[in-house]
Image 1 (cartoon, rainbow, N blue to C red):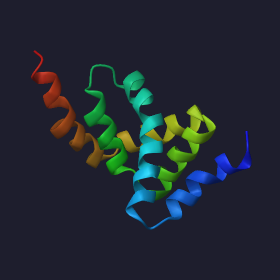
Image 2 (image 1 turned 135 degrees about the vertical axis):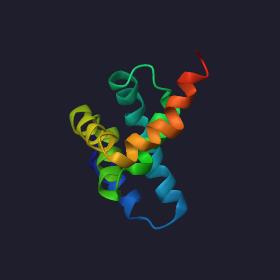
Image 3 (image 1 turned 45 degrees about the vertical axis):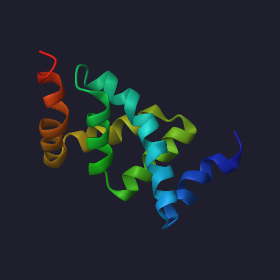
Length: 105
């Protein structure tokens, strides 16, 4: 693997533009989706992933984006578990993700 791919998420995260932020969040989301699907089966994937991303701090977003670039599932899983356990994230799950389950019943 080339060194640029390891540094890329950090460079993107340092960028103050909306494009840099969007790219970093998209990279983070790409690794969060499968973790949420595995760890929280049955919860609608997109809203639950958005809850995790929206409640992660900037350092955690960079960690997730870097994990996506390096395929570091262990680091990404730990961040997802940490963020998912926060009261704000649980509230987001209840408000945004769980209603999707109820509409399918």
